Structure formats: structure tokens, C-alpha cells
Image 1 (tube, rainbow, N blue to C red):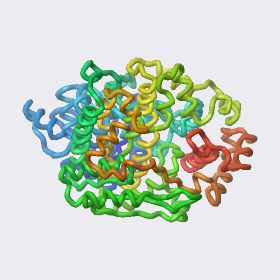
Image 2: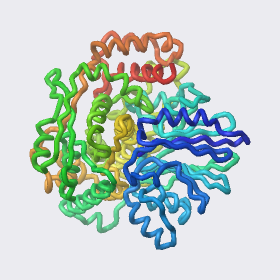
Image 3: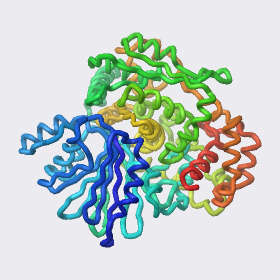
Image 4: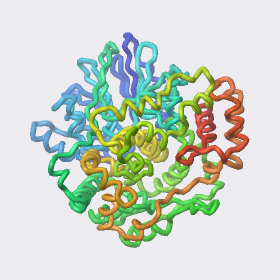
Length: 590
């Protein structure tokens, strides 16, 4: 897990090495163990390294193989790199390092662009050909690793973090009106290729971008998720699917133990993370470290799941750490979490993940985490509402969207009105081939888009702020493909995630499964009061906000007059959405 950066010139000029150094320095926290720069003609490459696989200097990046005439900067982890190495060695390739980076370089030489179909893992990379000058950018199937890029005068820059591109300079920072509609509709999710800044784009998951020396670009998707099943799949019963799923989970968790440092686990106390811990213990992990974060109770709501995490820790004999975060620390550290966001994210638990990551990083460099299970296995409340729907687009929007188009028009200044981009996006997704059942249309959208730019991005940003690598077995692409074959009714059983819960029952204590789903608010964000409310008020009333002119003043005043009264269908604060966006813009743009 690392940070990558680069500048490509198409106008015959030389790369701006100082700008590349600023990008590298900006990403120091993603890769605190080492740094490297490489300049070759019209191209320059930067890398920040977090040492996880092959701790030696042989795996230092940027990596260049003079015999092959190929170079690479790579962020992520490819779990099947030992198997690929053996296959490549049988073809005659010789290796000088023991990690995954060199495997990608030689795999590209052996198999061309199709090498990505052989990779199991999370990745974002740039590979360059010395002799042709061609560059290939790529991002993993589920978008676990980020990759941003920006056109500049006479060239292009890319980086793992959006703020790194801002640090380099020369970026068009005007607001993208389509992205603004997405942000205010999908609780801060802005699907690729958009970002809130018109001059910055992100490569879509499962996509390759080929860049020619003259700047011509072409993209192609190398993976998409289809919900299809054969006759054997249709005939399988619930119990058989449970056994097949458990085997798939075992494989996904075991893959993510490949590392040259110990692998721990984030243990929330819910089914998903508890199952991961159980599978890690079953796989023979010794001295397994587990971590759980909690907050103070508020308004009659529990602020932690310590008791359930403790049950799992005792069951599997883990070295367990409870991390309690006082409310005052949440408030004082919140600006740091906002600064760590590649893009503004309104989820309350960003600050919790940020502080959890800080604590975990003192003992572990790699952890497994349970993100993705709700989207892949049908754990959210809107999926049952779509079962048998005659109008799935409308039903999904009613359950998921933060504000309809009429309210959007009332929220933003008329200059940003535009079209109903969020409704059009959902309709296009639901009408695309590969999913016929209304529930599966929603599962596919949530797994491949909403998940990518909410919980997955949140975990990447907050963990990498402390050089902590988070691995997500529920997003193993083979497991996701397996889940797509399981009929929707098995996922919706038992109040959601039925088949996953039954698989878990074979391994973890029932007390963790047979309990209400937990969600722990960060009080000052859920109820928006005290110092955070004043910060939001100041941000939205500032001169910068007035000059930016994103929001209608009457709408902002209405929200400020009753900050706890205006919630989205998913119980998020509409005022926090506006305030966080303005706060993030002021932090990164001034």
C-alpha cells in the first residue's frame, strides 16, 4: 500500500520535478517508509512506500527493468503474486525481488494489458514503456485503491490522492455541477469519472487507460459484474449455498494473509468483522491482534459494541484492544480527518475510523476489515422494498436519495441547477444489461459505485492517513462474483444477509449474530450541536462561501434555524452535508 504520482508531457517540454516532489510529499502519510522519483524524458514518476511485501530495498519504487524496457509505480496488494511468479518463472522470467510489484511488471510484458485479468487484489498502477513512450494506468475491479488525474497545460498528472494534484498546482478548481448534484443526492458519493472539481477526474474501477506519447487516450473496462446463474445454481438450496459461500469466504480471508508483516483485524462486534476474525483464527493466525473503537452513549443510544467484540475476542483468543474515544477528542481532531479526505465524505464514522487507525497503526501495519458485506449480500433496508418492484428506479431513489430534484433546485444557487443527474445515473445503471431482478439492479449499483465512493474510500483515506493498510475480503472479486450467483431471496432471508449469517453461524458465537444491527453515532455530527454546529455555521457564512455561491441563502438559513430537524431518508444531517463540503473546499482550496 503506497502513494503513486506522475507527470506526462505531450508538448515536448520537461516534467516539473518540483511539482512531482510536492505530490510525493503530500502523500507521505500513505507511504511513510521510503520515497522515490524517476525522470525519463517527457515523463516523471513518484512513489511513497509502505513496506508490506518484500521489506528489502529490492522492491523500492519507481521500479524499472532495463532488460524489458518497462517501469512501474504501484499502490496496493496483489495476493496471488506467488502463483503468478511461479507461472512467469516457468516462462523464463528471472526475479530480483520477492514482492508483488515486480510480478506486475513482468506479467505486463508476458501477457500485455490482459495481465490485469489474472490479478487478485487491490491495485492502482502506472506502467510505462521506455521505447514507445506509451503509459498504462489501471485500477482494481472494485475501486479499492484510488487513482486521480488532471489535465494540465501540455500534459497530464496523476496521483493516489486528490490533494496531491492540488499541491502540484495548475488544476482547474471550479465546481463540477454534475458532481455537485451527485454529492447532494447520494450522501457525498460522486461516481467516477467525476469529482467535485472540474479539473480533476478519477479512473473508474475495473478500467484501464492507455496514454500515447502525443496525449491521445483510450479507456476500456476489463471487468463488470453480472448477475447470472446456470441451471445448477438455480437448483441449489439455501444450505448448499451456505457451504459454498463459507468456502469462498475462507479463500478470500486466507488470500489476504499474504504479507511479510503480521496481519490484524478491525473487530466492530458485528457479524461481518466477527466472521473475518473467526476465519483468520481458523486459518491458523497466531497472536492475532484485534481492535474495536467506541464512543460515549448519547441520547439513549449506545456508543459502542465492546461487549460483542469481547465475546469474539475471547472465543478466538485474540490480543484485543478496546479504543475509547471521548467526545472532546472527536471534536478537536475532526479538522484532521477532514484534511485526510481525498473528497468530502459526510459519514459520521470518518472521524472514528481516523482515530481508530491512529491507534491501530501503533501495533499493526495491515488489518482485515469487513466493508462491503451489506452491499454484496443485501444487508440494507431498501433491498426488500425493491423485491418485485414495478418501478425499481423510482423505488430506489425514494429510499436512497438524500433529496429529490425539486429539493435540489431549492438547495443550490440557480447557476448550479443543471439536469437531474442523479436520477439519470440510477436509470442508466438499472437499464444496463447484466441484472434483471430489481433487487439485483440495486445490489450491482451499490457494490460497484456507492460502496466504492463511500465506505471503501472512507476506509482507504482514514487508514492511509496513518500508513495502515486495510484489506477487505468481502470485496474479493471472485467472492463478489460468487455472491452475484446466489439468488436474491437467499440474501434477503432473515432480515437481510440471510445466507451470510447462516455461513457465519457455523463459525462464530450466535450471540453476535442474533442481535440488532448496530450503528454508533458521533453525537456532535448526528445531532449537530455545540462547536461543530458553530464550525458549520461559520463555514457556510464565510466570505469564501458567499463568493463560491453554491447554496441558496434561504435554504441554508432554514437548516441553521433547526439543525436537528432536517434529515435525509438515511437519517443523515442535510446541514452537515452542506457544511462539510464548504469546510473541505476551504481546507483544500482556501
